[in-house]
Image 1 (cartoon, protein in one colour):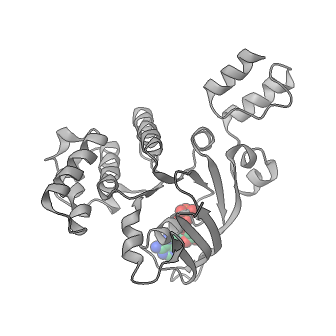
Image 2 (cartoon, protein in one colour; image 1 turned 60 degrees about the vertical axis):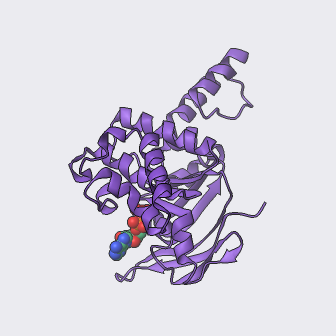
Image 3 (cartoon, helix red, strand yellow; image 1 turned 135 degrees about the vertical axis):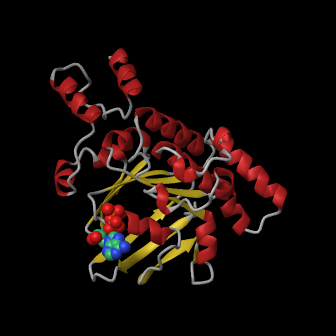
Length: 275
Ligand code: ADP
């Protein structure tokens, strides 16, 4: 199957002279749930900004549906690959929630009724109908995050990049976010999420990509990545709690010695029930 996005040897350097991306290559297929991991400064945000066309890479190439994205096609990249910024204040610009969410589809020059339909749908999706007329800048961190996700939903982008989306959320906000991510994935969207939450990455992702010093250190199934102690040490990542617990259960003979670590508590319970 043709990947939606192909990234080839991407390089980007900020004015400071430090290479933020130092030769990054990967393919993204439709429907993938990719956790982008790595320490602060590893290049995750810069990668996302290149991937949706906000930043132009110095060298390397991005292909969309197999076609190289040149200067002209950067607008298409922006439309088809949406980004939810880490800090909602960097994204939100309008004076009401409804006008904020309509901004993207209006920029696409869609007919008024289509803009209205998309705004209604995005507000309903993020449970924001009651906030329509509110100024976004007066909302709480979690509410602003919902608005910034609604912004991207109204663009109907096939690929959505979320840069540390849970960073400002309380536990209820995290649960709500995970329900939204599950629904988006069930609907076939392709999701890339940068996160420091290894427990979330382990249970949610179909693939884990580890960045370090502007390069990709590992790109594999979460069970493989989180099973590689040397890699985790190098990338300053810790093992998910579930993997640690599974090791103890196995060491005490309570879990099958040859079974792969389940990625969810439910799957672990099923495995132990079967034993
Ligand atoms: P991450 O998202 O993994 O924390 P970033 O992509 O933000 O990493 O940063 C990668 C590197 O680029 C870091 O060395 C960081 O200091 C540098 N950097 C990021 N943004 C800027 C910027 N606007 N100007 C200059 N350097 C930057």
